[in-house]
Structure formats: C-alpha cells, structure tokens
Image 1 (cartoon, rainbow, N blue to C red):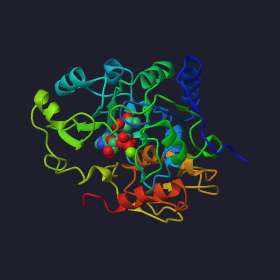
Image 2 (image 1 turned 60 degrees about the vertical axis):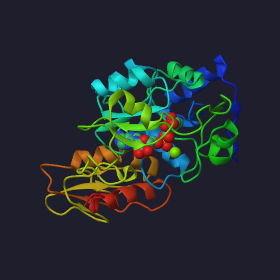
Image 3 (image 1 turned 30 degrees about the vertical axis):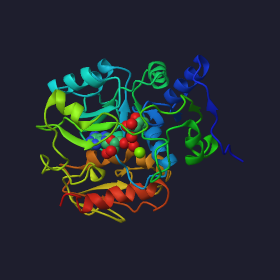
Image 4 (image 1 turned 180 degrees about the vertical axis):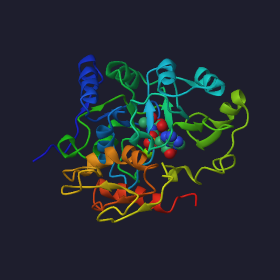
Length: 322
Ligand code: TXA
Ligand code: MG
C-alpha cells in the first residue's frame, strides 16, 4: 500500500536540496512561507502543475501564484511596469502577489489557467527562499490544502489535508514552524490600465495605496474581464462544441483517449487525465483560430482532474463574462 502520510522534515541543507531536486524532477513538495504553507511544483512543467490540482482535488483550474527568489527572477517571468517596480521595491520579499503580462514562455499555461498574465510573488520566509534558490526554477504554489479547506499555517495541517507521497501528494513538507503572517498574500493586478485589488491579504491595501495610489475593486476597471476572479480563465474566440465524436467540416478537433483520428490534437492518447490537464490550455489555444471556425471536443470522463477539465470546457461554451 502507498504511503499515507507525508513526512514533515526540518529545513536543513540536505532536505532543502532533496526537495529542490524533487521539484526539478516534476515532483511535489510542500513548504513553509510567511503567509501559509504552499504546495509547490515546477511552474515550467505543466504535468507537475496538473499534479498539484490533482493532489488538492480542485474541481476547477484557478490560476496559481508563481514564486520566484527575487525581483530579477520576477522581471524574467513577467513584464514589469513602473507600478510593479514600486511595489516590488516596497513589499518584496513579502506577502504581496503581483499579476502582470507573461514574458517567460517556459512558464506553463496551466499555471495561469491559460491566461496571458502570471501572478508572481517573492516570499520572504527563509525556507521558501532556500527552496527557490536550490530549485533554480519558478515554483507554482497554491496553499497546501485540499480544495475548499482552510489554508495550512503549520506543517501538521498539511499532513491531514493532502494525500501522502504514494497517493499523488507531496513527497515531503519542509517545516518552517507556524507561518508568521498566517493569511494568504494580497493579490494586485497590474496588467490593466489601473491597479486592481484581486484579493486582500497579508499586506494591507492601505499600505499599497500609500505607495501607488488608489486600488480599484475587481470589476470596476475591468469591464472586459470576467466578474469574480475565481471565474478567470482562458476563453477561446471560436465556438466550442462538446461531446463531439468527430469533427464537422471547418472544426478543429480536440480529442481524448485512444482511437482518435491521427490529425486531431489529443489531450491524452492514453486517456491519462493528468496529461490531459497539462495539455488543455495549450491545445485549446492552438485550435483557436484559422484555419478553423469552431472547435469540437470529445467527451472527457467526469472524474478526478476530468471534472476540472469539463468545468473549463463548459465555461468556454458559455463564457463567464457573457
Ligand atoms: O500566500 C499565498 O499567496 C499562498 C502562498 C503559498 O504563497 N498561495 C496562495 O495561492 O494563496 P492560491 O493558488 O491559493 O491563490 C492564488 C490567487 C487566487 O486568488 C487566484 O485567482 C489569483 O491568485 N491569481 C493567480 N494568477 C492570477 C492571474 N493570472 N490573474 C488573476 N488572478 C490570479
Ligand atoms: Mg488557497
């Protein structure tokens, strides 16, 4: 039988380098940050990111925060602007996440639920810092809890919330003691014409306004974007037809499983839902335009990550903002 408990380990040099290696190999590691414990995966590896959604049993693909070791690494990941420079200078490392246009195309599309923006954060916890330095890759990390449960602020909470290493959970939990901030980071969207507070968190909105001026609430300045940030995801331009068995003329075909036509894009020829999740947004984008006039999608089983895939596909048929 598989391991049912993830070991909690002290953040000594050996464990940090083992954890960093596991991340580079595509594994999952839970680790302390100053806000809450994160469930980390290599942000450049969509398969590893899919495993994060699987471990959390998330019914939806929400965009995840990409953790980097310093502002320079953030500048390599996303396109900075003057407001971002000001906020980074004032609050990084720390409990602030900034959403900006994506720049580094090694960062997978699943991390940002297919969006053209990426949320980045430089954590200040020494355990998170050591892990990021050792890993040498940007680390996608949502809070290390099962979907719908409260965020973990101590290593022990993670053990009881997530599956063990043999069941798709993290290989280890790097213990950093209780999280000093204890609430998630504040999320500010700087990708539009004016700054938007997407999520209140560890850095007070007033403190942010003191350096960059007034923050809008989600939606206020963002008429074109979907209401409620939870709904944000990539929405294709072309109409989508679900449960298709074969493509009609003019349709691009997004297949799943064995036996699909060779010319189709196949989310997973072997019917592996993690692989399908990893491919979903990139393949939707690839089919979303000429020479196609519509996209036909084969049925995907509605279990495990298939639920999150189907959630996204259904929302793409009826856009959240429409
Ligand atoms: O404190 C934290 O932020 C913790 C620790 C582990 O760093 N992480 C965390 O991640 O809370 P998560 O995945 O639970 O929350 C990510 C938040 C969500 O509210 C999500 O909608 C938003 O960030 N987000 C991420 N990428 C986005 C994007 N491209 N556009 C808009 N919102 C984004
Ligand atoms: Mg969370």
